[in-house]
Length: 424
Image 1 (cartoon, one colour):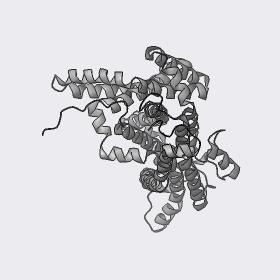
Image 2 (cartoon, helix red, strand yellow):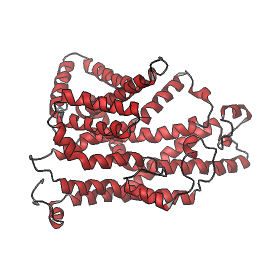
Image 3 (tube, rainbow, N blue to C red):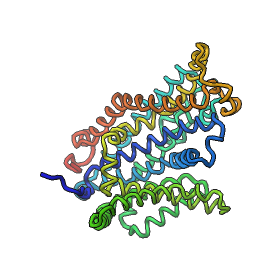
Image 4 (cartoon, helix red, strand yellow):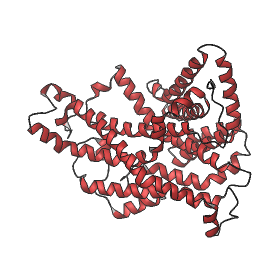
């Protein structure tokens, strides 16, 4: 039987593998962005000028620095779809809360232990690797790590990605409040209000006002997912009537998402007041995140691409990659110095007099040379992916199973929850 030329729109309760793929790409972008940051802080700025390579890397750095905003909007979508799945009133907030906190905290605690292990194996006392690498604590304070483990009152910087998980925990606890409010407000009103709140938070430097509305945008998307599916389904059907129109529409939609994500950067030399540029940048990045999520979840060509095997695997290990890539990168950066010295002692120096002026003055990585620094960053990302795979199997997957067990009706009844039949 021939395959259908179109994919049916996913229903509200269906799992969306493409969104996992999108999350995986975002996590990889964060990891690559940190690796690129190390390169940029040790290789002279001539590489980052108006050349196609420089423009591409600059654009990627801007997009990667805001990938966590995509995480926030995506969390709003995913948790809302979970909460609205099944019959009305079937969502058990108590079981959900236990499950969600276990899903977040158990991998975080293991990641903090991994930070301690890597810091003991590779001492962080040396410097000269650039502002990002040198900015991490050289000594790990046990009390600071204990505070990090709570995800409640700020983080020490020992594992910088944890700052985003503070907001994930807060949103997870406030999900019912988000649903109660945003279900009663029309999307044409709630979306502008949420965007305006986030933009105002960016101008004022208020993280609460900036980040919490991002989750609300995802909640609104999920609450109106079926209506959005009908709209995009009609557009796709119309595009398929004309040869090539679907491809053109897909390219234009992705190009629009890229333009929205970079519009603030493009206006950086326009002379606009900083508050105006901040509003444009915040709004553009959030609209780009919403558009990418809608395309990945509902537009067939993009959905197929983001549901591919490689991206499916990347989405599977995305949380692990997000947690472990930083200590791996910091360890590789510091280990590269004695390794490069040993290689150079063997007569295979990577740095040459011709490339000496391409290295930032005082860089501890000077012996690697510019291309050796790039190779080091690539190797660190590859090792991060391998480590994330092991971390997922040993930590995240068992934690996920335990979190699912906490949502089981029998578990809820055992701890004094609601009717064990509720939410099944």
